[in-house]
Length: 62
Image 1 (tube, rainbow, N blue to C red):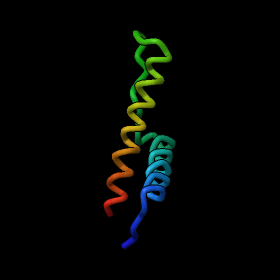
Image 2: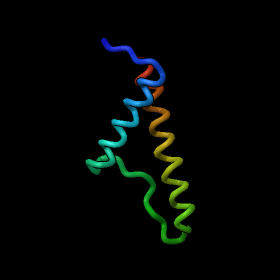
Image 3: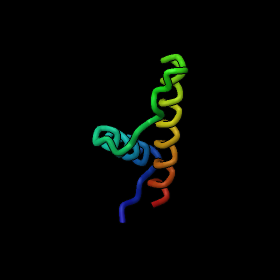
Image 4: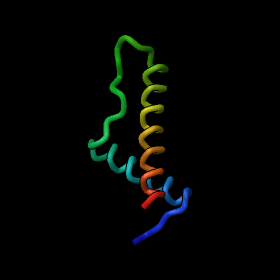
């Protein structure tokens, strides 16, 4: 079984997230017309960052 350090786990999590977004499987926060584009961008970035952080932790524990 492969083992990953923190850096390797983070790189792998980013790659998985990138592929999932490109494939349309992973959808960050939808744009809300009632919010400003800045707020929508911040929400999407926070959501995606949380996803990557959690995935990194899980990969590192493999």
